[in-house]
Length: 281
Image (cartoon, rainbow, N blue to C red; front, side):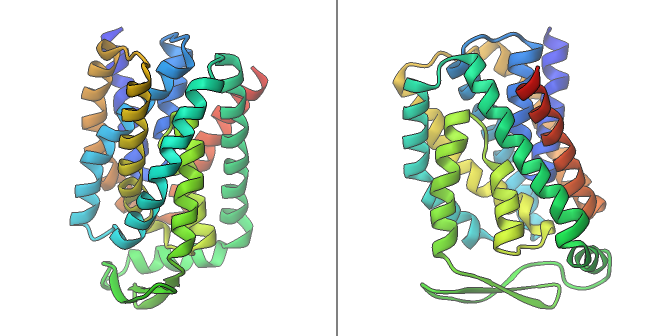
């Protein structure tokens, strides 16, 4: 059992720190389907503890690579505080049945997976190709903030200017935190498509930015669940955490060489498979 927990932790850490999402979904899959934890609330907290650990490791790695838009991640995190409190409290009271939890979990992951595949193979195919080409070139890859105001934040990446309205990540942070804390996941499976499809953030910058905001969301949600009285199997968490540490160091380096298209495809496949399993099995 200890070896399996350790190996699964490596997978969770590598996946989450590579694509900035799906680590919590994999953690939930393992806790329910591999390790047989029957309490939905316990599963939620244990998932988020592992994700929190992964973010503590992966965010500094992304920061050293210049792959975190801190102002965007911070806005998402600030918006998530009230959302995490609301989502975890409501879920603790009303989403306690494991069967219901798995079904909702599956629907959300399947919908997001289909949206990611649509973006990769149709809607933004040329934009993805252009970004991958730029990343593999010799140009400057770090983000530079050009200007910021209450209405618009402008930054430059790979020589191109990008912008977003700061109100959008505040609202999205709240909404995503309600859902992610209620399901006991990090929220990257919603943050990633939001940043890519709505804010048009290059995928190369998304994992680190997503991880930074999830660090805030997960910490608030975990503390609230524990305060409400949820028990945690710390024996399981210990061995998984050891694996998460190793996997989290591996992830950013994997992300650096895969490119945007492969990152999205990997994320989509993970979410699609787990979504189908929990809806129909």
